Image (cartoon, rainbow, N blue to C red; front, top):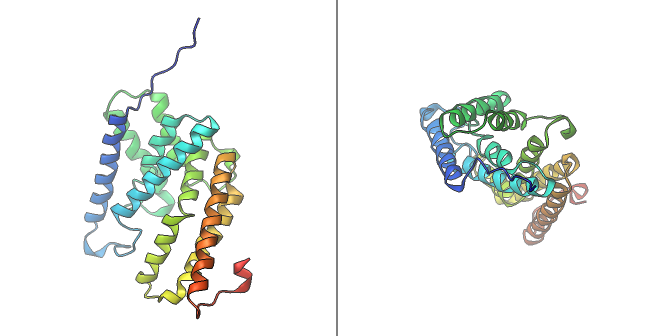
Length: 230
């Protein structure tokens, strides 16, 4: 008697519809603030940046889930919704707010099993967990690790450089900003648990270090603390 393979509850078409909903929700969050939004002009406070980050988390999370044996559908959908409330809710409650939006969407679109919806919402709620990753489900761990990794690399560097413009800094401060990405990467590498995420963090750290060293080498007047270069 063969082993029955359960059909995925999330088709490519279904996922594309979810992604469109998430982008539209983010865009509406910004538009509804008006000119007095609390972070209106920050580069990371835009539907475009936030959605790009979300899709990176989806891709990274799926890669980790596939390697670690987690439920890939749960990780993909949780990654897609994990920051949907980021532009309208305070940081300390955006995960819970995002889980509520996800639950409303999943319960009203399609026929997703209740157990699947619960797993997705738990992963969204847990992605802001600051304790040990052994304390959360494997699917939640995948989302957390993917979220950490996206901040360490090209996307993280670009965000820091954009932040320079917001803070009226000059290009002479660029090495300092990239150093922040590198430090964040070192902290992320210490925190991740899965073999796949650890390997990805190692590769990203190498790239950020290479870029930081290249930057310092080409801008002769740029100074960086020697201890930071180690």
